[in-house]
Each structure stands twice: as structure tokens, then as C-alpha cells.
Image 1 (spheres, rainbow, N blue to C red):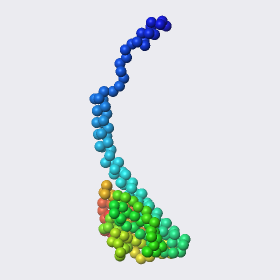
Image 2: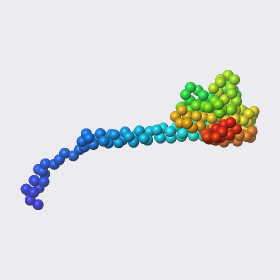
Image 3: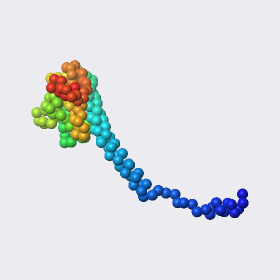
Image 4: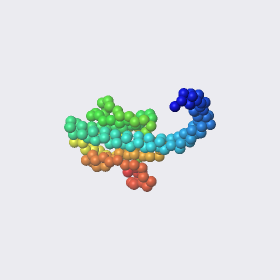
Length: 181
């Protein structure tokens, strides 16, 4: 190859590579439209997932209370309450003892669908007593959770005196006066 040919290749004027303002604006509009379509679905998915996790943790906490009652041979008290914008729950061996709370924000207790025993000192607190063999002392019940972001309900139901728990969700028809079963 001749030197003059190589020199011509390097001296050729090349067009600047880049993008125009119009191209940037089109991309921004497309991203904005996609975000507006996807955001509500994502928020709904996240809120439903939060309800499911809280439901699983409440059921697990009740089962853990039953296990501790059997293990220590001491009755346990499962407590759940609405505390500001969060729901919190835990177990204790005595009503006067402090509770190690587990908390979940942006979830509320549906007071019309919750049937655990109501605490006399706090109208936003419910409880269930688990006997020293893990069975339920007193009435059976349910706790129903709702989310402000979606129209969903999740419930944990103490369904037998032996302490069997089950999970439920909102249905369009009521059964025994409850929509969560």
C-alpha cells in the first residue's frame, strides 16, 4: 500500500457520531409511557406480596408459640395489634411481660373480620392463649389483614381447639359471615 493512500484514509473528514435531541426526547417519552403502564401493576404486586409474607409470618409465629408452649410446658400468649400504620405481633408467657414484636408497615387489621379475643386495655389489640400443650384455651378465631394499596385480604384462622392453623384469602361470596376464608 502506498503512503499517499494511507494518508488519504486518515485525512478523510468523518461525520461526528452521536444522537440528536429529538432522538433523546423520543426515548424519554417511550420510557415514560412504559413506566406509567408498569408502575401500578408493580405497586399492586408488591402490596399483595407484602400481605402474603405477613400472613406467613403470623402463622409461623403462632406455630412457634405452640412449639414453645409444648417445649417449656408454659402457656403462651400470641398477641397482635394495630400500632399506627403498622401491624405488629409476638408471643409472651405472661400478659405483663414485654413482647419481642415483629412489625409490618402499610398493612392494617380488618377489625370487622378479626375474631381473636380483644384485649380489655387496648381496643386495637387481640390475643389468643395457647395452653402448655399448644392447644387453644378459650375461643377459636381469625385475624384478617388488609392493604391500603390493593383490595386484598389475607387471614390466618385458628380452626381447631388442637391448634390447627390455616391461611385464607378474600372471596367474593361470604361464608359464615366472613369474606376471608
